[in-house]
Structure formats: structure tokens, C-alpha cells
Length: 182
Image (cartoon, rainbow, N blue to C red; front, top):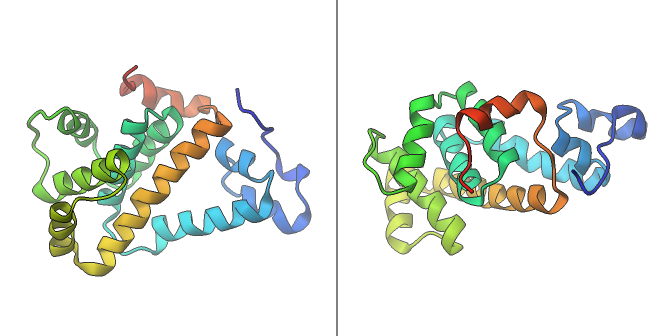
């Protein structure tokens, strides 16, 4: 159960009602601080809609963060969103297998992005070798965008865990299909 209330549009001042145009429970919690929510959504909007980073790669990186953090909310939401951006069920299973060190059919760039996300999540940053490989593959601009996406979602999973944001019922099937490990 969430530690703070989920607000509705009717609970917000007129100038903040737009913050719940996507009324997921994370948004309904964050609007308890409307200005912080607006800043948070601005960065999230850039990551999803403004960056030139391939959306499938972005979603794989975010999924890797959610998997490692064992974040039910993040994982379930981005399994669904990943589907919208070209991530297949086979990709999701391959991410799980790759994390376990098992062979997969993922392409080398996808494996590299997952490695970068694992290093940033588990070690606090990418190794020199991984960073150099990412920069060689993506160029500087997209390397920065990937780094920002991974770092941001590492923050998101901590927000979710601290506020104890619940998984909405419509996202539960994604958790059932690809359950997190205990």
C-alpha cells in the first residue's frame, strides 16, 4: 500500500490538472508535489519522446534496471511499454537470460545496452570498456541519452520503492507472465 495518497484531477489546482493526463498511480502519487511532478515528467517526456535513442534499446535498458531492482511497478509497466516500442516477449526472456549469463539470440548492440544498464545499476557507473564500446556504437549524443535514461530509471525505482507505489491491476498480467525473482 502506498505511503502517500493517490490524488485525482479534482484534487489539484487548475494549473496542475494537466499533470494527470496519464493517470497512472505513480503520477497520482507524485502530484502531491505538483512542481516536482512537473519537473520529473519533463525529463521522462524527453527520454521517451525527445531523445533520438532507439526506443527499443531504451526500453531494454529500462527493463534491465527494473529487473535488477526487483521493481514490480517498473518491470510491469515497461514490459507493456516495451511491447509498444518493439520489445518482444522473446526479448524480455533474453534479457532475463542475459542477466543470468546464459546465451541469447540478442543482437550485439542490445547486449551492450543491457551490460551498460547492469553496470550503472549494480556498480554506480559504466566501466571504461563498456562506455567506450557504447560510445563507439552510438556516438556521443546517444551515449549521453542512454546514460540519462538508465540513471533516471535508477532514480525512478527508488522513488517507487520508497513511496511503495502499487501495481495497477491492468499491469498485473505482465508480472504474471514474467515474474520477478524473490
